[in-house]
Length: 69
Image 1 (cartoon, rainbow, N blue to C red):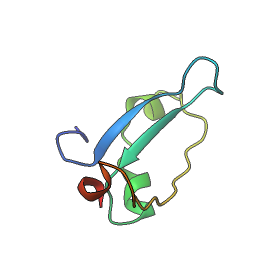
Image 2 (image 1 turned 45 degrees about the vertical axis):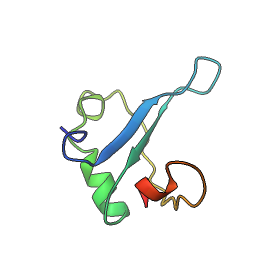
Image 3 (image 1 turned 45 degrees about the horizontal axis):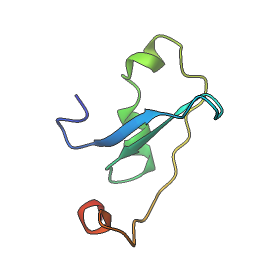
Image 4 (image 1 turned 90 degrees about the horizontal axis):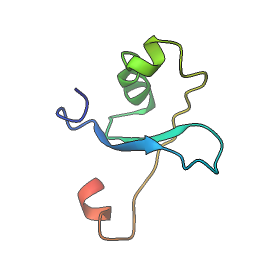
Protein backbone atom coordinates (compact mmCIF):
# COMPACT_ATOMS: atom_id res chain seq x y z
CA UNK A 1 0.00 0.00 0.00
CA UNK A 2 1.12 3.55 -0.67
CA UNK A 3 0.96 4.50 3.00
CA UNK A 4 3.33 1.74 4.04
CA UNK A 5 5.67 2.69 1.19
CA UNK A 6 5.83 6.28 2.48
CA UNK A 7 4.27 7.66 -0.71
CA UNK A 8 0.79 8.62 0.52
CA UNK A 9 1.41 10.92 3.49
CA UNK A 10 -2.23 11.81 4.12
CA UNK A 11 -5.49 11.67 2.21
CA UNK A 12 -9.19 12.19 2.68
CA UNK A 13 -12.41 13.47 1.15
CA UNK A 14 -13.46 17.09 1.09
CA UNK A 15 -16.21 18.08 3.55
CA UNK A 16 -19.84 17.64 2.51
CA UNK A 17 -20.29 21.38 1.91
CA UNK A 18 -17.44 21.37 -0.64
CA UNK A 19 -17.39 20.14 -4.22
CA UNK A 20 -17.03 16.34 -4.38
CA UNK A 21 -13.47 15.09 -4.34
CA UNK A 22 -10.50 14.33 -2.17
CA UNK A 23 -7.00 15.56 -1.45
CA UNK A 24 -4.04 13.18 -1.41
CA UNK A 25 -0.61 14.36 -0.30
CA UNK A 26 2.10 12.21 -1.88
CA UNK A 27 5.86 12.14 -1.53
CA UNK A 28 7.23 11.62 -5.04
CA UNK A 29 10.28 12.47 -7.13
CA UNK A 30 8.18 14.32 -9.69
CA UNK A 31 4.62 14.86 -10.94
CA UNK A 32 4.70 11.83 -13.23
CA UNK A 33 5.67 9.55 -10.32
CA UNK A 34 2.86 10.95 -8.19
CA UNK A 35 0.34 10.43 -10.98
CA UNK A 36 1.60 6.92 -11.66
CA UNK A 37 1.11 6.06 -7.99
CA UNK A 38 -2.63 6.70 -8.38
CA UNK A 39 -3.11 4.33 -11.32
CA UNK A 40 -3.85 1.29 -9.13
CA UNK A 41 -6.11 3.19 -6.73
CA UNK A 42 -9.37 1.22 -6.33
CA UNK A 43 -11.43 4.38 -6.85
CA UNK A 44 -9.72 4.98 -10.21
CA UNK A 45 -9.87 1.32 -11.23
CA UNK A 46 -13.62 1.25 -10.58
CA UNK A 47 -14.33 4.45 -12.52
CA UNK A 48 -15.19 6.50 -9.45
CA UNK A 49 -12.61 9.20 -10.20
CA UNK A 50 -13.35 11.43 -13.15
CA UNK A 51 -10.36 13.78 -12.92
CA UNK A 52 -6.88 13.66 -11.42
CA UNK A 53 -4.60 16.67 -11.22
CA UNK A 54 -1.11 16.86 -9.76
CA UNK A 55 0.53 19.99 -8.38
CA UNK A 56 3.92 20.30 -6.77
CA UNK A 57 3.78 21.75 -3.27
CA UNK A 58 6.70 23.13 -1.31
CA UNK A 59 6.08 23.16 2.46
CA UNK A 60 7.85 26.12 4.07
CA UNK A 61 6.22 27.02 7.39
CA UNK A 62 4.50 25.12 10.17
CA UNK A 63 5.21 22.21 12.44
CA UNK A 64 5.20 19.65 9.61
CA UNK A 65 7.28 21.61 7.09
CA UNK A 66 10.62 20.06 8.10
CA UNK A 67 9.16 16.56 8.12
CA UNK A 68 7.62 16.93 4.66
CA UNK A 69 10.53 18.61 2.90
